[in-house]
Length: 444
Image 1 (cartoon, helix red, strand yellow):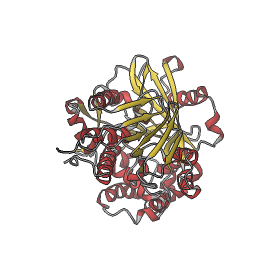
Image 2: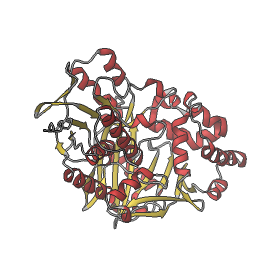
Image 3: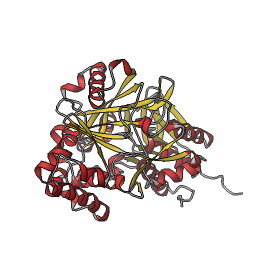
């Protein structure tokens, strides 16, 4: 008589952001539905949505580029490909109390606050970013120095200084050139006939999250929402124990996808070696207080407007209503800062007041009575600080037997994104199953 098949390995995934969802989805698709732990009361991570005046909006803005192929593949599997829409968008530049067009060759050449030679070098630099294939040299030089070498100090001060200063503060001079190169390239590649073209789901990100949750449950994934993991402990028998508010559970494999610094206290409680814990605790991030404002009229006709104004510590505003039609003028105003900066202790109302003041400065025809509603969300680990030689600072992806730890830094130099997290998460799930000698074929 044939022996019964061996039981499937018990696998846990920590974190239900886009990467954790992708890991869980791929595991379940290949016949190994995991248990998915999420501290929040909903899935999505930084892509999670909330009800804002009757509109389901993300707490933190996202958009899609033409090169987001991993996300498009997932949408097709979720029967959502037809829900993807595209729109030609425009950029603006609010500089010294005046709004200028930006983002196109004509707009750059017409910009009056820089000499012609600097504007030409700016365009040449953007074109060069499209042709760079090996980014490893850029990983060893500072982004600010690289940009200065192309634009000169005056050009850098006008075009880039505030964006770095108001996002990274004292970390600004340490950011890797590979990181900013990746951001420039992603947007530059999202053009049709030289026009910036960005995408959105007609039902917003919530449409993707609803479809993912339904697919996960249908394939047998067990979702543990509102269950933060308190402890990760590597056991002598090779299993991994997780402690949550619901008690301790043991798994044959655990995959964490939450920000690396959040893993440090879990490992500490679980008794991991101090030298390993240090690798996670020392990963640097900046926090974000992201204000969402609904106004009676749009602020501009742009999707994205960079801000260079001494009055506001704001790198730019994002008018989501100018990308995805939601029946209202919706603007995101992000404030980035280290979490230990005194500004992060300010109440939400203070950030909202600063955001409103900025919007009224950009469009003086608006008044405070045009502000219909506002909201502020905060996230402690919003943006990793990707310094020079960044890859060398990352911990191993499998630091202990049958424990994998990854977050968005693992696909550096690409910046945080739903598509990038989706592609990485699915590949990671396949690697874990191969290590466990799991059944199933990797995705095509």
